[in-house]
Image (cartoon, rainbow, N blue to C red; front, side, top):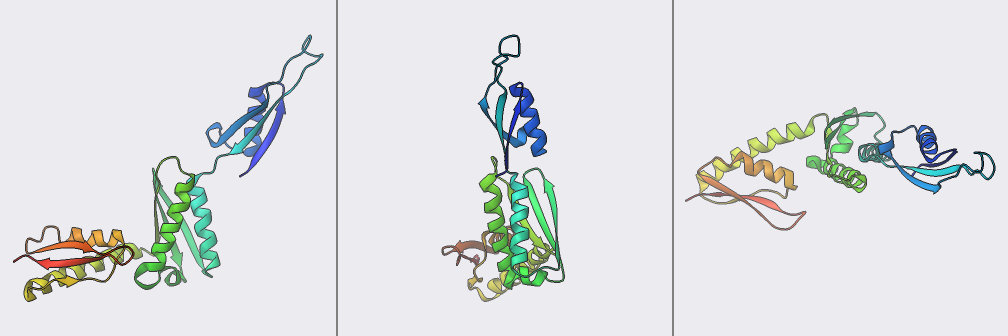
Length: 207
């Protein structure tokens, strides 16, 4: 964590000097007063300067972005760009470029892992919960549409055969897409079974 020590005639002046050195506003730094200082006799004899230490408070989104860029680089995906979109405490990192397939993985498994790790990094520094989404070439929207179509297709099959249908294990946010897609279907019901990361959705016909 970056920190500086500043000396001035007063604590306030030392704080301002320290903030200037860090290049941040007061809310981005933790201030520790090492010496309060004193004016001394006639403002000269026995005077002692004020000394403060300012520690930069890490920004959770900046730390998350730095982490994601480093991991992506280590994975060998150098021909990509990462664009940050932030709306309050919800942040989306959109990855674009020729090598996004490497970062998506089978059924988005690699992308999901990147998102989980990036979210953990962000919330290690955050005072309030930060929601992180890591996407690549709008893969998540395409995946959502594919899951909705799959849910509807399997629901029809369950109704036709009268038998339950088990889907492959899915992460929580994808299971939610399946549940939501069939929530208004009065001929089937859905529920999840198993333990993470092997938890899956069952589509059951209502008899």
